[in-house]
Image (cartoon, rainbow, N blue to C red; front, top):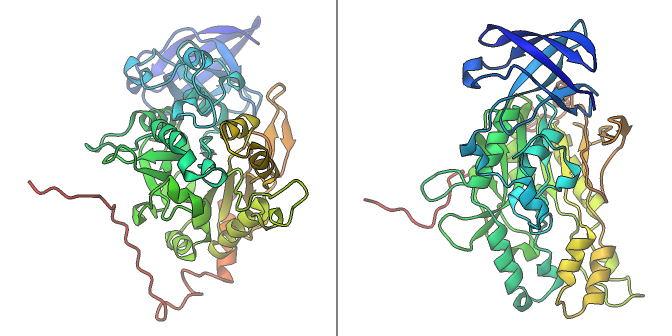
Length: 457
């Protein structure tokens, strides 16, 4: 990997000139911070290259957990973006899980807590103390665009696979690994605060699904999606309105508080979770808020039937086709709202299957059901519901590879969304405007947060 060092001459609170020696070659550089220098502490005089931007092939400055975004112009070359390192803020770093802790056996993936959702082996090493969460966000961000980071804590698949009386240990584990968005005092939970800090430092819009532990209970859980803005503020905290089918054994019903569209620098973004994309009223509530991008999150598998025997596929044929069923609902929303769609699905790996089989009464039958269930996909849709061409990036070479969707493997799918395309279709069907009969239909949405008690002092 190329190495470099250079000296900065600060000519303004947010601007510096520098000369770098890159592998023996001098290169002039002007640097413009997005924020005044006073907001970021002292800037170092020497920087090292430690990673490469996988989308552009440009080298990115970095090295510590705390960064200040910047843009540079090398000689007459186009601008590239990166991060200026500054000293680690210990008050922030304490809420992260360090890489060495994860590598020493902390749970990763299935039933993993928020800090442990990402496999550190696939992430760049940005310096001592960099965490799995931060490194993952560093790896996936493309400045100025929204990112939907799939929650690798899978849906409670033990519920359809095993009898409720066999699942007490699974539920206890689910509770232990679930996280708090806000505590009883209204303070942001540690894991979510870590994500907010990372979103702020990287100037990234983040949408993420979590299993949320209610602040008023030791075991009440919600299926939750959170949208965080580039300044680290939580814009939308949505709890799934109705847990679907067997999810009712794990998650509680949410409320209308999160039926909101976030106004972000990347566009107006709304999100619904899995089966509530079937609910036309919930979808319409988002359409009525000038939605431009709709994020729908989906489970890896959804077994509604378990095969009776190896040769009996009659019941299996009645399982949900997760590709068709999910895309059908997401595309319908895109067509009706004239918005873009981001379908984000989890991945079921062999480790998760083995975890579910451990102690099961009929492991062979259960294995067939899990392995034969159709898998969900991650893809992008345009305002007509048609697929948007996407691409992945080769981790070794940084080369773009055309790819329409992700299904059986973890990865990052990229696409360009031109929000101007959300306008034309409104001429034909603007179901929240000229193509609606507001004198005939009247929809009211209660967005109050439902609490178990109100204390009056």
